[in-house]
Picture 1 (cartoon, rainbow, N blue to C red):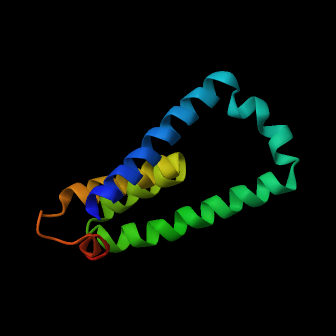
Picture 2: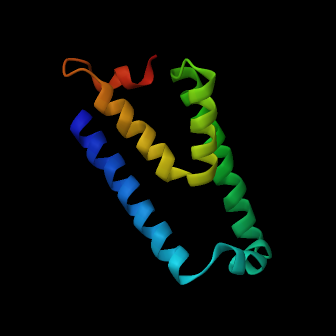
Picture 3: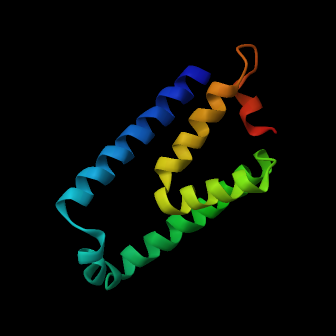
Length: 108
């Protein structure tokens, strides 16, 4: 199970990183903002994504003990979205001891 999760989150991390770079090179976010903001579905999707980011951050805040670490991860999650989230899960997976099950990922 841990190996499958590592492959899944590594794939998400790589896919989102490449997609973000490729898209940024093709069209600037700031140049596309007016047409994006005019589309109600785009705005709804953006709210949905950020509410998901905040939900994920609640788990990160539970897992992380230092305020500094929580602040850094909040900024990364809000700025990079699923890139930061998949990186966080990968770090947590690689921190698990070989004998620990994947469920241990959810605990402090």
